[in-house]
Image 1 (cartoon, rainbow, N blue to C red):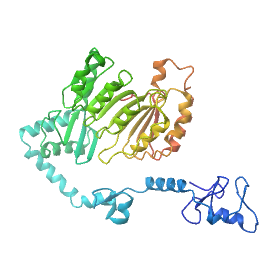
Image 2 (cartoon, rainbow, N blue to C red):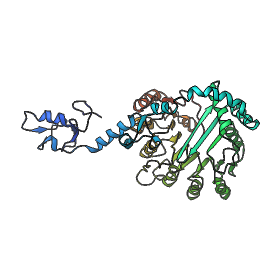
Image 3 (cartoon, rainbow, N blue to C red):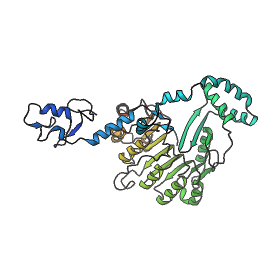
Amino acid sequence: MDCTICMEDYDQEQRAPKILPCGHTVCLQCLQGCAQGSRRQRCPTCRAIFNVSPTSLPNNFDLLRLIDQRADARAPLGWCSDCRAAAIRQCWDEHDVLSVKRALKHHLTDVLPQVAGHIQGLHGQCQEREAVQALTLLTEDAWDLTLTSGDHVFSGTVRNTKDPVVKALWLVVAAKAGLSKVDPLSERVAVVIPKESVQAQDRAAARRPTAVPTVTESSLRVLDVGLGMQQAKSAALDGALGVERLVGVHCHIDHAWCLQLLQRAAPTVERLGVYRCSRVHLQTVHAMPRLRRLHLTGDGDDSGLEGEPLVLPALPPCHGGLQWLSVDVDSLPHATIKSLLQAHSFSLEELVLQIVRDRSYRDLPSLLERCELRALRKLVLDRSHIIYMGLDRTFVPLDSCVQARADVRRVLITEAEVLCSRCDRVQLEEV
């Protein structure tokens, strides 16, 4: 943030941002320079006369707060040994804080040289049951992991490759974690889920009629309510207890029942597909403590989020944050989407923005600016709905993509990959 006169960054002292009576903001040093040798003081922007000393003009505190927030977002990550967590601003002043790389090195001192010998010994120590578990882990293509401890929840995917570190990881997990098959409704510290089983459930669900909600009992508990949910509301509510993947929730069909369904699923759901949600639905979704993947659309008009646009609050401490988000930018107010992105800025790795209208393309930089998506690795502009809706002629020309992607890259704070679903032929993921 810099002064429009001298182009130098504002600060709290000599270049403090001062608000003039005309409404313009100029740094203190520029105002003092303009006042020297002149009996009249004028705004250097509009030349309006003012009669007070530059030092007595009020500071632009909103601008100073924004500068502080951006500085915090770009500050190096630290590890607080007192809190045993990522350092916050107060930790740097009061606690023992190291950079995360130095802290990691400290925790692994003398560990890495000993690892090779211990792993070789694990191979011989595995009992038959553990050997079967290790072979299962080694032979699936990929595994989804969810690890919880206290208020911390981590989830991600490990793909089996020729990487020896991954192979060693599975041996350690099988030998040390005491794995057992888990009742999907019971509490667990760690669950390892084969991706292929999820895909098989999706294919099986697609072949079933949608009149009855589909509840799949497996290592990942899935509930697909579909558009025929009115015919089996009671069964769907029962199935929502303990569910981890909930899809096909169309809130406009039955507002109150969908809210009850989301509230039932809230404690355990990790993946959610919800459509045409209202303000209260979105507030319920935002509070789900274990949610990691979300596909979201709003009502598409002012009735869905009645009154002033909903601005979502910061996440509670127990929430680990979304890692993957797909949202229809034409169906929700931009203020709502921006607050959602800001709430998950520390964790969101992949973002899919569904785009239909050319106006939405032009608004993307303002939507993403200052969201501070510090974990973002990939952003996809999803134009697949244009094909489904037959809107090629009047919506989003193809040549808008190059400029739109360049504008988006300009406002992101990471080197995230920015793709177009049509131009780059991106295979879009399911929630």
